[in-house]
Each structure stands twice: as structure tokens, then as C-alpha cells.
Image 1 (tube, rainbow, N blue to C red):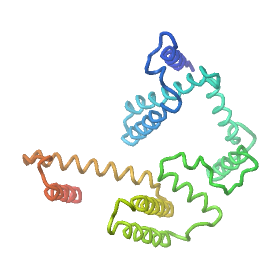
Image 2: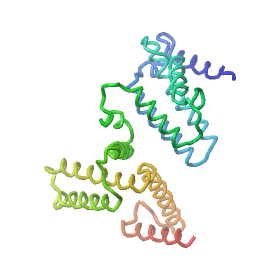
Image 3: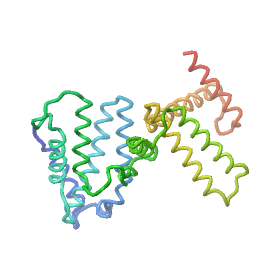
Image 4: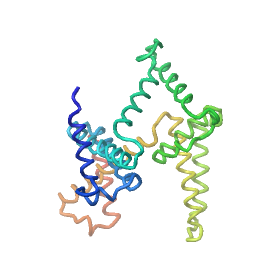
Length: 266
């Protein structure tokens, strides 16, 4: 397989980072300043996958790859690592974690394969660290995903609810505590409001986990649904010559209810 275009991309980015003839913007970038772009491009690729748009997937995956190459070139200029060493490291890891493909282990059972993966991954970590410790790496994900992963970690030592009905009571408890802080709401207690809101969202994520639902996916689906409905509200308003900007909240809510009714009838 020819990798000439990957090599060309590496050369292009290296040229952009050339101290003498490079791009001023690219030369200003650091690992930290580029983080938001890596996050944004990754989510845009995820959205393209959800839409099933392969042309967009190819384009967005290229944007993700650009971030990988940018970080690798910056690291190489700082004498830390480069694209080749990054590729070697992940290739070695994949070989190491797939003994059923590259080694002597013979199994086709997906459950056993996943268990072997986790066992190998655990051995790769520091030996002095408790297997029950909640690692900082669990905080690296989007907040709802982190909450679910933390719950899965504590579930392994039975520090968890027995079923979703028990979690539901916890969600209701946190909701009541949030309402207490909001009645009445005062500038002085906004920190408490934020804390209680966080507790409510955390317990909601645990409810999703017990229901075998990915809370991040559930929220993303809700965002998509809201966007679709709101756009339909705008279309309906245009059909009737109604100005969105001049409409009251009650008028817009009436259009919203009509859109929901149309959805149910379709």
C-alpha cells in the first residue's frame, strides 16, 4: 500500500511550520492551543458518521488527521516524537492487545477478547496503582461520558445501585436538592446551584448506565431532534408569513406543539 499522500501531508505541515518560510498562524500554534481544534474536528467527524455521509466523513477524517500530523510535527521540532514513532507505538499496541490475531491465543469469542484486552491494558499500567483507583484519564472524556465511565469503575467493586429503580430515587433526590437551591435563586448561592446541578446530571448519567444507554449518545440524539423540530417551526412560520424574531414565546410554543403533532401523525 502506497502512503505517498500521507508522506506529502507530513511534508506540507512541516513546510507550514518552517521557521523562515512557514505560515505565521501555524508557527504560533502549540499542543495546547490546538486542543480545541482536535476536539471540534473529532465531533464533526462523528456527526458525519451519524448522517451516513461518506463524502463528509472522508473530508472530516482528513481534518482529524491534520491535527494528528500537526501535533507530531510540533513534537518533532521540539525533539520529542514524530509521526513515524506515533504510528509505531500504536501498531505495537494493537499487536500486543490482539494475541488472538498476532499471537498464540485462539479465541473467537467477543466477550473473551474484550476481557483479554482489559487484562493486557491493566498490565501495561503502573503496577503500584490500585486496580480500583479512579484514574485521571476517566476525566478526559466529555462530562457525561466521564460520569458513565466512573460509574462502571465503581460498579466493579459493588459500590453501585442494584437496579435502575434505585438510581431513579437518587435522581429525584438530587432534583429536589436542586429545586431547594433555586427557591429563591440568589447570586450568592449560584455556586451551590452549580454543584447541585452537577450532582443531578451525574445521577442522570448513572441512570442511563443502568438502562444500558450511553448518556452522551442520548443527549446528542436529543440535540438532533431539537434542531430538526426547531427548523420545522421556522419553516412553518415562513409558510404562514410569521416573523420568528417578532413572535412571542407563547406563539412559538404553539408552532412547536403543531410540529410535534405532525411528527406523531406521520
